[in-house]
Amino acid sequence: MTQANLTRDTFDQVMMPNYAPAAMVPVRGEGSRVWDQQGKEYIDFAGGIAVNCLGHCHPELVKTLTEQGQKLWHVSNIWTNEPALSLATKLTDACFAERVYFCNSGAEANEAALKLARRWAVDNFGADKDQIISFKQGFHGRTFFTVTVGGQPAYSDGFGPKPGAIEHAEFNNLASLEALISDKTCAVMIEPLQGEGGVLPADEDFLKGVRALCDKHNALLVFDEVQTGFGRTGHLFAYQAYGVTPDILTSAKSLGGGFPIGAMLTTTAVGKSLGFGTHGSTYGGNPLACSIAEKVLDIVNTEEVLGGVAHKEALFRAELERINEKYGIFEQVRGKGLLLGCVLTPEYHGKARDFIAAAVEQGLMILVAGPNVLRFAPSLVVSEDDIKQGLARFEQAIAQVVSA
Ligand SMILES: *Cc1c(COP(=O)(O)O)cnc(C)c1O
Image (tube, rainbow, N blue to C red):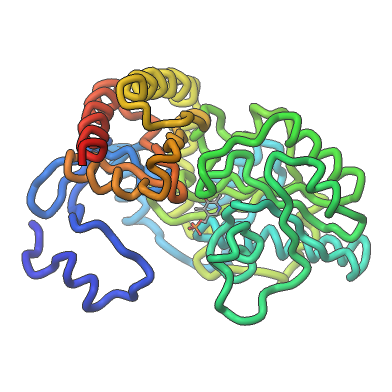
C-alpha cells in the first residue's frame, strides 16, 4: 500500500521549502486514528488544523463523496448547481446570513470579505471610506491582502509594497480600537477567538464594544470564523454564544470536514455590493465540495454533536489540569469547546515544538499556536476512549520533554 520510494527526504527534493513537515508520513486515517508508512498508529488531536471535524474518513462523508463523485464534480459558475443551492439554503437558515459566496479556502473567504467591505463603502459612502482595522496576532490567511490584514508582520514583510489603509489594534483592548476607528473605517475584521495567535478568546464585553464602535462609525463587522466555526466551540458559529452578530462571517476549515471549501456569509443589503462581475472563483461552489459540506452541516448542526463538544471539552480540561498538577508546565489552559490551548510557563517559552516532536514519538498528533502554546483541535466526535488514551500519550510526551 505505501510506496517505499516516497519518504520525507523526497519532500526536500521536490517540494518548495515553505513547510517543514514532521519525519513521519501519514498514509491512512480512520476516526481519530492515523497510521504512518511504517504502520505506527497515532491519535489525532490536530485534526488537520481544526479541519477534520468528523475525524478521518467518516463513513457518511465517504458515502457522499462517492455518490456525488459519480454524478457531477464541477461545472463552473457559468451554471449553478443543486448541492451549492442546497448548502447555501441550509447555511442561511442556520445563522444570521441571507447570502452566501463560495470559494475554496479560508484566505479566499476573507479576501472576498475584504473586497466586499471596500466595495460596499465605495457604493454607500464614497472612496474615502477605505480603512480596514484588524488585530495584532490575528490570522486571516496568506494572500497578500489577508496576510497584511493579519496581525503578524513577519508573515507579510518581505514581499514589497503592501495593500494600504490597514491598521492593527490590540485584541481585547477596546480603547486601542477606539483610538483608530473613525468614519473612514469601512470594516473591522476579527476572530472571536484568535486561533493561530495563541488560542485566545475575545472577552464578551470587548466584542460587544467592537460591535458598538462599528455601528457608530458605519463600519462592517467581519467575523473570521474559519477556525472557530462549524461546531468547534460547541455552537455552529462562535458568535452565537457571544450574542454579537457580525455583518459578514467567513467559514472554511471544518466546513468541508477535510474537503477544500470556503464561504463568505452576509446580509442581502451588504451582499448587494458584490454585483455581477465584481468577484469570482472557478472552483468556488463546485458540486463535489458543496455536497460534502452539506453533509458535514447535517451532522454537525445537531444537539448530539454540538452538545457533545462541551462534554468532551470538560474531559480534556479535567485531564489537562490533572497533568499540570503533576508537571506544572502550563500557566493556563484556555480556549473554547474543542479548540484548547495550553500556555507554557516562561521556563518552556519558545519550546512548544519540542512537545510536538515528543508527542509524535509517543503516537500523538498535536499543534502549536505560536512558540508558547500547545493547541488541541481534535475531531468533534472524538470518543472518550480516544481522549483518555491520547492524553495519556500526551502525559508521556511531557515527561519526556521535562526530563530531557
Ligand atoms: C486557517 C485560517 C485562515 C486561512 O485559511 P486557509 O484555508 O489556510 O486559507 C484564515 N483565518 C483563520 C482564523 C484561520 O484559522
